[in-house]
Length: 30
Image (cartoon, rainbow, N blue to C red; front, side):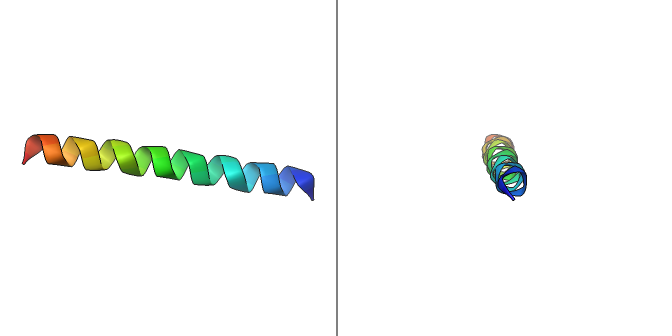
């Protein structure tokens, strides 16, 4: 159970980081 929570947290963090990077890159282009 704990492993799933850790994996979910890691996935959420990765998604947030990717989203932030994409948003920053998009703002840089336009």
